[in-house]
Amino acid sequence: MTHSSPAELSLDLATLILKAATEKAGSLGVQVNIAVVDAGPNLKGFIRMDEALLGAIDVALKKARTACLFEMETGGIGDLSQPGGPLYNIEHSNGGLISFPGGVPLRSADGAIVGAIGVSGSTVEMDRAVALAGAAASAPGP
Amino acid sequence: MTHSSPAELSLDLATLILKAATEKAGSLGVQVNIAVVDAGPNLKGFIRMDEALLGAIDVALKKARTACLFEMETGGIGDLSQPGGPLYNIEHSNGGLISFPGGVPLRSADGAIVGAIGVSGSTVEMDRAVALAGAAASAPGP
Amino acid sequence: MTHSSPAELSLDLATLILKAATEKAGSLGVQVNIAVVDAGPNLKGFIRMDEALLGAIDVALKKARTACLFEMETGGIGDLSQPGGPLYNIEHSNGGLISFPGGVPLRSADGAIVGAIGVSGSTVEMDRAVALAGAAASAPGP
Amino acid sequence: MTHSSPAELSLDLATLILKAATEKAGSLGVQVNIAVVDAGPNLKGFIRMDEALLGAIDVALKKARTACLFEMETGGIGDLSQPGGPLYNIEHSNGGLISFPGGVPLRSADGAIVGAIGVSGSTVEMDRAVALAGAAASAPGP
Image (tube, rainbow over all chains, first blue to last red; front, side, top):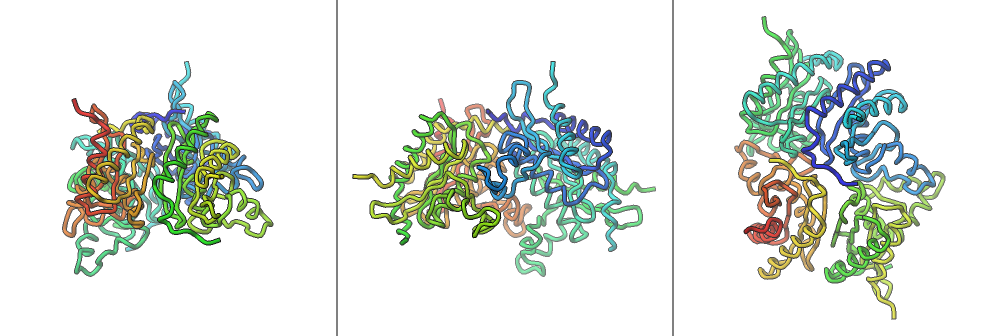
């Protein structure tokens, strides 16, 4: 999959993604950290909702990086990195990966990766739901 | 100086600070990275304006952390960390400090430190002007 | 096993190894990162094929280092590092090891270790096949 | 300055750049490490010439990253990071910068940054000459 230019993830788009994710978190009644990276992957935007766990700041950042670096949801890495699995302990690479759900690639309308969003602070199911809501804002359907 | 609770820097306030700083950057015609940390200092909010230097992401984050950790503007550390100075090479501590201007403590109306803002991407004078504009939004005067 | 001098893995040989590995990847239709280290183990050569995963850059580098440091294929470490195994979580050492297949020692004609090759970006089976093709170029048989 | 897509620095181009740099080093009679990164900046290609200093491997990698992250030659950073200078000790950011000559941005014909080259192992003047020779191969003039 071709990566798009880091410049293609504008601050306007990142702000839209953060807003969509925050609203989803609000509707679910959870407090989370939300990170958005470009295709680099380099940090583009971040917010910590009030009362979100401090330990989840870095987890959100690493989820976003992981999803971008491997062009898949973080949970997909975790499926492969379990004991006995083909990518066991891959989390030691790239300065630390997070391989449970909550990181989702951001794609443009043509499918190119423009970055990723990482969410952490609630259950992994909730985190993933918030991340997906953010990702949906990056490539509006027809 | 007493540190406030990390909870005291609300997302609403952080958003207000980021907005004030971004508007200042826009009025100056510069593209910068802007980081806001709480009194922890833990990351609360971050934005990278379009075309801001990638290398300045980490510099902005470290300026914010440095200003909070030492309860002073980052340039004040730089005055002390020069060769022959009393804090020579203190930049090696805390996982890396940035000691030139652009990091400014955030204070509540009673003077307590509630966090810090770090700005990087332009000249240090411009970066500092943007950071001060953000910091001014954290403690509205009479 | 005696380590050879770092000088013994010439750039000519490293280039030959990278070429053999790249051709194998091409024939398999996969895009991978390929790293070659000497007996130090210090980086000697590296290429990222177009569209190879960004996250696999560091994995390839760590596979090469791991195979050299432990004088065996990386998958052999993984057999021992599983939960309950004798080297459980050895991946925490040496700044991060990778213990699944794709890292292969390079040996001279007399069996001495002259370095290692690490490949990442496809499945571990494919990565290993590419690495073995590269390693075969380092010690031509009769 | 807009960064181009990491995908835009093809392996073919990176190989051309490495070849031009290596030939320049050969003509100067120096042994160096040469690193090429994309606009990410993520490693794209690397070679260590025979007898190049081991300690210069990481320096070459960091020069390439630094030149890309700050969109200028590494020596330009060093002019600003001296004691008393506006960016004193900025080298502590981004996991370690190198701010003396030998890192040069790579630009496409339209001036967009597509990555950077870093060279280390000889004098900084020689390193820079080699890097410039590599960079010239990335945007052939009329």
